[in-house]
Length: 369
Image (cartoon, rainbow, N blue to C red; front, top):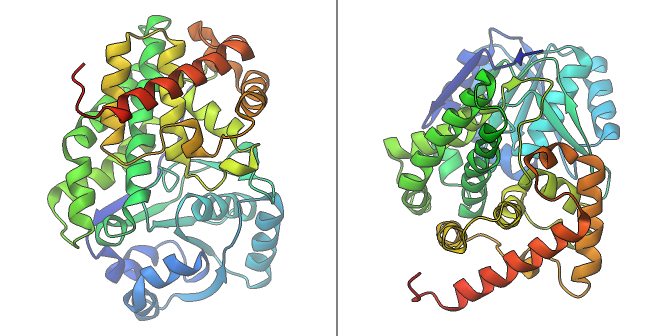
């Protein structure tokens, strides 16, 4: 069965936060705002003034930790006690995943205000849930995407570069992970929409991504800045809006989810781990070495974590990778229909081979392949 879930509105431009109330008021007039400390400051006084000018009451609840079932229950209870009619998430993926889940539980409309572009979480009709320590628990499907997304390009692109670089590679992953599925479902309409949308985002980010991030650190905002934010949030989100009973994904995202079992890796962002997961996938696919090397060099432009040590897999690497591999196979086996990574041993071997290749390439940056 085909299911399509998208936001009702997506507004992306510099300084749109100053007009937030104008967009939000059609969805409610009393909001529970869920946000982390830094994002709540990043939106600035102009945001709160805009709410007040549009007669929107608000209650702020600071977010810490991870999107957990307990946190969702707590925020939902507060929403009901305060008799709000609107949920607003301000921050990154963890905040907006929490806000979406609260909206789903309370049946209230959700407004997503991403302050970074590290994933497409602001768009997706799914919440990634963890336990209190940060270990992945489940992907919880929500009835709807947020009703409205306000993507203020200035706030997003001037955020620390690490977040946008991670978002760029998380978006590139949409293409790397979907395109192999054409070999087994060439005529599937949903898959073709996903592949073509992912390729559009891929090409745009390869052309403009690094320059936009560098400009953003100098507070320079251009039309390409808007395009990069749109590629990460809108295009990548759009690719995930179409779901069927069949799974048309790859290895990198299962690798991320499974790796959260390792506490020493939790300091890494989603997209940073996905980058290594993609390289492991390419090894599993038996791609030509020259192609993998080209991909490593492309990823290195975005200052990513590309080795096992970089993501926190160090002293007990074989044991840790075995834990990850076994969890991938147990909980996320859908990618195996591509004919890759069917045993834990195969996955562990591919991880070590990808790591060795990255180390060789990055230790010799002037080498021409």
